[in-house]
Image 1 (cartoon, rainbow, N blue to C red):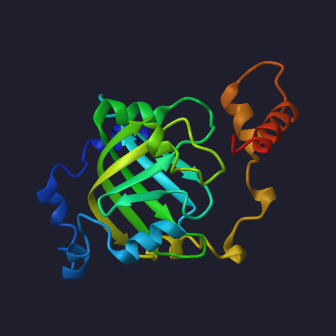
Image 2: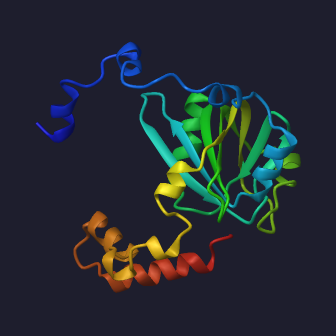
Length: 213
């Protein structure tokens, strides 16, 4: 039995039990959840250079994947619709396949230097419509496809988590020597005889050269 199976034996069983542990949310925390963008949250979307996309497949397997670009790379189509261009990645297409399977996604917009984030959840689809893609040229050319989210919920999230994590405070970051290098992590994951850290470092460097293609 692993740690999860052990802890699951006496896990919180239902919503009522969970609410006995926590007080009810304050009025502001409930009221600030809306179904469409305001002018201010539209401006916040235009400032974000990083979006985390949460999705789930038909069997309930969850995934969170980052998408990045210059500020404004996510386009607001109307107060209840946004579009995120795809960019060259590992071609696994986990997020896109999940969206096609379930038609749902959740977004978390992150603005560098700012501790407030913006949560957005709703209906989702993958579009290859040319007239849409021609509008999504933040990296200089139309993408092969885009994720389109029809907003059901939009919620400005408080800054506590990013503040607690010291996300924008360099003096709280661990030094590079205290962290496993990207190539080290990849080498351990791949478990391929004969493959070296130098091989992976060369591959990573090549991939970064063409990150916008």
